[in-house]
Length: 443
Ligand SMILES: *Cc1c(COP(=O)(O)O)cnc(C)c1O
Ligand SMILES: [Zn+2]
Figure: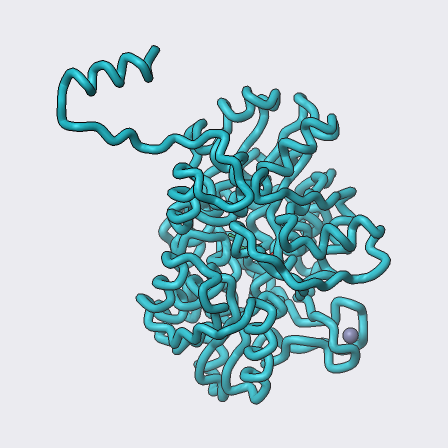
């Protein structure tokens, strides 16, 4: 593709001004709101939808740097002016769609699919956005920018992704974690990748406030999803889903949400496909929240009359334990545009939904449990029907949440009655006892 494409930052609320993706700027200087990356649609429209589909198909699965990546396959739509030599990629994306045949059968949904975004380099979808952000930083540094390091506040997965991409690029990283509120797998990831790990005696929202102050002087670059570069990478998940279905759009997509960057990104990818003629309808989007930390659900219940912020209570879905979501306005616009809705799930519901899915061959993280619990509610309510194609976005790998699973199967989770617990059976090493026990279990 020979055309030159352009993308720039603009105010999401529409204030005047546009900035280079290589400027250190996170919010609108006029109103303080979020920025978004705006692409030159004129230039993109010079190619037909058929040409784009062919290009993306030709790149899929190749080793041609960097286009084998599930993000950079769509490079012209993501960050077109990046030098390929500055791209920091782990071949992210390319995650499988798991046809949830048995789970679907149990709940009367033969066309149920799980997008396994957690089958990724650092075990969560956060890789999709981080490859874009760290690549842009690498280009900025190559061009002599004063940026020395990249920092993020995190509920665990963002810091793991930041640390891995920083280490791959040789760029120093700093992560701010709420002490005692991330899993040990999530804590050890940035440590192993050489990040400076600061465990603060506060919650996620407290870490967010500190990192904003620390990144004020522009020598440390802010990697949180208020930085809309990450949204550009994360938006490819929807494009990849549709490509995997040979450009057919599903009826519903359910996604667990916290800071609300991910659902905004999902919507942005669909709107771009629609504008460029690759698809002619939109899916309905469902934002799934943990009832312990559900400000977006509370706002939705009041018809989004105003943003709700509240102190997030402890939830097993620790990556979405957020009370003051940064991308609220974008996510609200997305839910409205996509005829969407917001639903929430209790600890009991999310843990049992995750266990039910696991018993059909999945290995779900608690956030995916939230999305699955919400799915069950919408099926029971008759809103999601048996002829619908439904995608649940699994956001992280279950292996990051071993303690959650152990505690569930030992029925040790507070507020949860583990209806599907499958604890190990402790026996003496005696053939007769083993045989008798098996007789009982296999009957
Ligand atoms: C970050 C994250 C989410 C939520 O994404 P937001 O952009 O914060 O809404 C959901 N699940 C997991 C596992 C995550 O790491
Ligand atoms: Zn503005």
